[in-house]
Length: 276
Image (cartoon, rainbow, N blue to C red; front, side, top):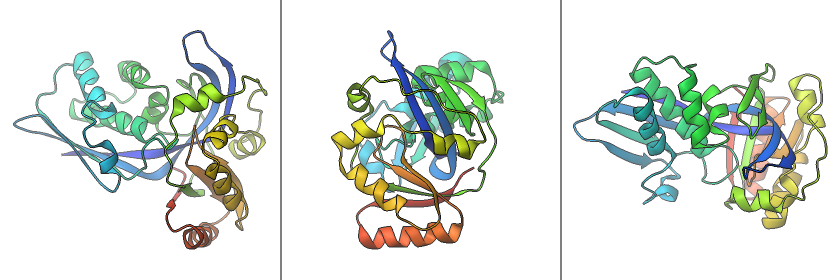
C-alpha cells in the first residue's frame, strides 16, 4: 500500500489582477501548506474501487467522478494503465472551504501513482495533468511555499515560515469559488510586493475576501475573532473561503486561541497545525 498526505493549502495573500478571456482570472498569490490534511492510500486490487472515509466523507457521497478518480484516469492515459487499484480518500478537510481540499487530494493521488509506477515526481507530464484538473492542483502537486501567477499554475518556490504555528477556522459554511470570483469588483489593487515571505504576506491582501464576506457575512466574524487573539502575526481568509487562518508567534498562543474560539463557537471547525 502507498500512502500519500494531501496537506491543506492556504493563500497567505491572493491578489486578483484582471479577468482573462479564457474565463479564468490573472492572479498573484502566495501559496503555503500545512502539516495536516487529508490522506490518500492506493494498493493493487482484484477490482478497481474508490472509497471515502473520515469526518467529511459524507460531503462526497454519491459524487462518483471526483478529482481523485479523474486524477487516476488521466494518469493512466499519460503513463499507461496501472491496473486495478483500490483507492481510499481519508477526508479530514471540509468541502468547498478555500484550503485546496479537492486539489490536494488530486495532487496526492498523482504523487502516489507516480511512486507506484516509479515516475519522477518532477515529471512535466504530472504538472500538465495537474493543470488540467484545476488551477490549484499544480501548487498542491509541488507541495511547498511558492509564488503563483497566471491562474495560479506558474510557480516559483520560496522559503520561509516553516513550522510557523497555524490555526484554521471554518464557520460551517461552504462557499463556491465561481460566485465569489464573479462578485469580485474588477479593481486591480496592485501586485504582491517585495521582501521575505512574512513581510510579503502581511503587506498583501486577499481580494476575494470582500465578495466572499458579502455572500457569507460570518467570514468577517471569523477573521475579527482571529485577529483579536494574542500572539497573532497575520489573520486572513484563505482562497475563496470560507476557511480563515491565523499565523501565530508560538504554538502556545495558537493553542490558547483555539481553546477560546472553540468555547465561543463550539460548532465551528478548527484545525491546529503548522506550516510545512
